[in-house]
Amino acid sequence: MTHARLTVVAGPMFAGKTAELLRRVAAAHDQGRAVTVYKPETDNRYDALALVTHDGRRLTASPITLDCAGLVLPPPGALLVIDEAHFFGNALLAPVRSALATGVDVLLAGVDLDHRGLPFDPFPTLLCEADEVVKLRARCARCGGPAVHSHRLAPGSDRVLVGGAEAYEPRCRACFPR
Ligand SMILES: [Zn+2]
Image 1: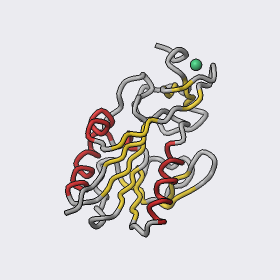
Image 2: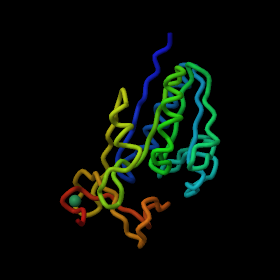
Image 3: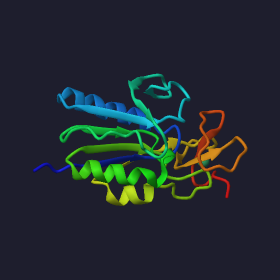
Image 4: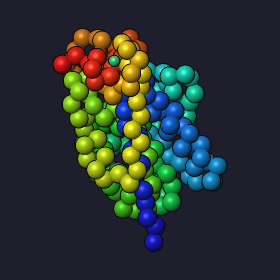
Protein backbone atom coordinates (compact mmCIF):
# COMPACT_ATOMS: atom_id res chain seq x y z
CA MET A 1 0.00 0.00 0.00
CA THR A 2 1.41 3.36 -0.99
CA HIS A 3 0.26 6.61 0.56
CA ALA A 4 0.84 9.45 -1.84
CA ARG A 5 1.24 13.05 -0.72
CA LEU A 6 0.15 16.30 -2.34
CA THR A 7 2.46 19.24 -1.66
CA VAL A 8 1.43 22.70 -2.88
CA VAL A 9 3.81 25.66 -3.08
CA ALA A 10 1.80 28.88 -3.46
CA GLY A 11 2.48 32.59 -3.53
CA PRO A 12 2.77 35.66 -5.73
CA MET A 13 5.19 36.24 -8.58
CA PHE A 14 8.85 36.52 -7.52
CA ALA A 15 8.33 34.64 -4.25
CA GLY A 16 10.83 31.87 -5.09
CA LYS A 17 8.27 29.15 -5.88
CA THR A 18 10.27 27.56 -8.71
CA ALA A 19 13.42 27.68 -6.58
CA GLU A 20 11.52 25.79 -3.86
CA LEU A 21 10.48 23.18 -6.46
CA LEU A 22 14.09 22.79 -7.55
CA ARG A 23 15.23 22.27 -3.94
CA ARG A 24 12.62 19.58 -3.39
CA VAL A 25 13.36 17.88 -6.71
CA ALA A 26 17.07 17.80 -5.84
CA ALA A 27 16.19 16.11 -2.53
CA ALA A 28 14.06 13.52 -4.38
CA HIS A 29 16.90 12.84 -6.79
CA ASP A 30 19.24 12.38 -3.82
CA GLN A 31 16.85 9.70 -2.54
CA GLY A 32 17.03 7.93 -5.92
CA ARG A 33 13.40 8.66 -6.75
CA ALA A 34 12.03 8.97 -10.27
CA VAL A 35 10.86 12.54 -10.96
CA THR A 36 8.63 13.69 -13.83
CA VAL A 37 8.34 17.43 -14.41
CA TYR A 38 5.70 19.27 -16.45
CA LYS A 39 5.04 22.91 -17.24
CA PRO A 40 2.43 24.69 -19.37
CA GLU A 41 3.53 24.98 -22.98
CA THR A 42 2.41 28.61 -23.01
CA ASP A 43 5.01 29.54 -20.41
CA ASN A 44 8.03 30.13 -22.62
CA ARG A 45 9.40 33.10 -20.71
CA TYR A 46 12.86 31.65 -20.23
CA ASP A 47 13.02 28.21 -21.84
CA ALA A 48 10.34 26.03 -23.50
CA LEU A 49 11.80 22.80 -22.10
CA ALA A 50 12.89 23.71 -18.59
CA LEU A 51 11.77 25.28 -15.35
CA VAL A 52 13.99 28.29 -14.82
CA THR A 53 14.22 30.37 -11.66
CA HIS A 54 14.38 34.14 -11.95
CA ASP A 55 18.08 33.87 -11.06
CA GLY A 56 18.74 31.41 -13.87
CA ARG A 57 18.79 27.92 -12.32
CA ARG A 58 17.03 25.30 -14.44
CA LEU A 59 15.37 21.87 -14.44
CA THR A 60 14.29 19.99 -17.56
CA ALA A 61 10.49 19.88 -17.94
CA SER A 62 8.02 18.61 -20.52
CA PRO A 63 5.59 21.22 -21.84
CA ILE A 64 1.91 20.21 -21.90
CA THR A 65 -1.23 21.88 -23.23
CA LEU A 66 -3.58 23.64 -20.82
CA ASP A 67 -6.13 20.80 -20.97
CA CYS A 68 -3.43 18.50 -19.49
CA ALA A 69 -4.02 16.00 -22.35
CA GLY A 70 -0.30 15.29 -22.64
CA LEU A 71 0.23 14.55 -18.95
CA VAL A 72 1.39 10.93 -18.57
CA LEU A 73 1.30 9.66 -15.01
CA PRO A 74 4.63 8.26 -13.79
CA PRO A 75 4.77 4.89 -12.00
CA PRO A 76 3.77 4.51 -8.34
CA GLY A 77 6.44 5.82 -5.99
CA ALA A 78 7.56 8.50 -8.43
CA LEU A 79 7.25 12.24 -7.88
CA LEU A 80 5.11 14.23 -10.31
CA VAL A 81 6.07 17.92 -10.41
CA ILE A 82 4.01 20.64 -12.10
CA ASP A 83 4.99 24.29 -12.14
CA GLU A 84 2.75 27.27 -12.95
CA ALA A 85 -0.31 25.30 -11.85
CA HIS A 86 -2.58 28.35 -12.18
CA PHE A 87 -2.19 28.24 -15.96
CA PHE A 88 -4.18 25.00 -16.06
CA GLY A 89 -7.15 26.07 -13.92
CA ASN A 90 -9.35 23.26 -12.71
CA ALA A 91 -8.26 21.04 -15.63
CA LEU A 92 -5.37 20.09 -13.36
CA LEU A 93 -7.54 18.55 -10.65
CA ALA A 94 -8.36 15.25 -12.40
CA PRO A 95 -4.76 14.26 -13.24
CA VAL A 96 -3.56 15.29 -9.77
CA ARG A 97 -6.21 13.15 -8.12
CA SER A 98 -5.44 10.24 -10.48
CA ALA A 99 -1.75 10.47 -9.61
CA LEU A 100 -2.44 10.47 -5.87
CA ALA A 101 -4.85 7.54 -6.22
CA THR A 102 -2.17 5.48 -7.94
CA GLY A 103 0.54 6.16 -5.36
CA VAL A 104 2.31 9.02 -7.12
CA ASP A 105 3.41 11.93 -4.93
CA VAL A 106 2.51 15.30 -6.45
CA LEU A 107 4.40 18.56 -5.99
CA LEU A 108 2.81 21.69 -7.48
CA ALA A 109 3.67 25.36 -7.54
CA GLY A 110 1.81 28.41 -8.76
CA VAL A 111 0.20 31.76 -8.11
CA ASP A 112 -2.71 31.44 -5.69
CA LEU A 113 -4.21 34.96 -6.09
CA ASP A 114 -4.82 36.46 -9.53
CA HIS A 115 -4.00 40.04 -10.58
CA ARG A 116 -7.30 41.23 -9.11
CA GLY A 117 -6.47 39.62 -5.77
CA LEU A 118 -9.03 36.83 -6.19
CA PRO A 119 -8.38 33.11 -5.56
CA PHE A 120 -6.87 31.56 -8.66
CA ASP A 121 -8.15 28.14 -9.78
CA PRO A 122 -7.18 25.41 -9.11
CA PHE A 123 -5.66 26.68 -5.83
CA PRO A 124 -8.84 26.94 -3.74
CA THR A 125 -9.32 23.20 -4.24
CA LEU A 126 -5.65 22.19 -4.22
CA LEU A 127 -4.92 24.02 -0.98
CA CYS A 128 -7.79 22.17 0.70
CA GLU A 129 -6.74 18.78 -0.60
CA ALA A 130 -3.00 19.20 0.02
CA ASP A 131 -1.10 17.29 2.71
CA GLU A 132 1.42 20.11 2.89
CA VAL A 133 1.06 23.76 1.91
CA VAL A 134 4.09 26.01 1.52
CA LYS A 135 3.07 29.66 1.31
CA LEU A 136 5.88 31.86 0.07
CA ARG A 137 5.99 35.63 0.16
CA ALA A 138 7.77 38.07 -2.11
CA ARG A 139 9.06 41.53 -1.18
CA CYS A 140 6.63 44.37 -1.91
CA ALA A 141 7.96 46.52 -4.76
CA ARG A 142 6.59 49.65 -3.06
CA CYS A 143 7.40 49.33 0.64
CA GLY A 144 9.50 46.18 1.04
CA GLY A 145 6.87 44.48 3.20
CA PRO A 146 5.63 40.90 2.76
CA ALA A 147 3.94 40.65 -0.65
CA VAL A 148 1.00 38.30 -1.20
CA HIS A 149 -0.24 39.88 -4.44
CA SER A 150 0.96 39.97 -8.05
CA HIS A 151 0.15 43.48 -9.28
CA ARG A 152 -0.15 43.60 -13.06
CA LEU A 153 1.70 46.46 -14.71
CA ALA A 154 0.80 45.55 -18.30
CA PRO A 155 -2.68 46.21 -19.72
CA GLY A 156 -5.17 43.40 -20.28
CA SER A 157 -7.90 41.67 -18.34
CA ASP A 158 -7.12 38.04 -19.21
CA ARG A 159 -6.58 36.02 -16.09
CA VAL A 160 -3.38 34.47 -17.41
CA LEU A 161 -0.82 36.83 -18.89
CA VAL A 162 2.60 35.33 -19.38
CA GLY A 163 5.20 37.76 -18.21
CA GLY A 164 8.03 38.60 -15.89
CA ALA A 165 9.22 41.79 -14.24
CA GLU A 166 7.89 43.91 -17.12
CA ALA A 167 4.34 42.67 -16.50
CA TYR A 168 4.03 42.08 -12.75
CA GLU A 169 5.41 43.30 -9.49
CA PRO A 170 4.82 41.88 -6.00
CA ARG A 171 2.75 44.05 -3.64
CA CYS A 172 1.78 43.72 0.00
CA ARG A 173 -1.88 43.98 1.00
CA ALA A 174 -1.55 47.68 1.86
CA CYS A 175 0.09 48.62 -1.46
CA PHE A 176 -2.15 46.46 -3.66
CA PRO A 177 -4.62 48.67 -5.57
CA ARG A 178 -8.27 47.74 -5.11
ZN1 LIG B 1 3.79 47.39 0.33
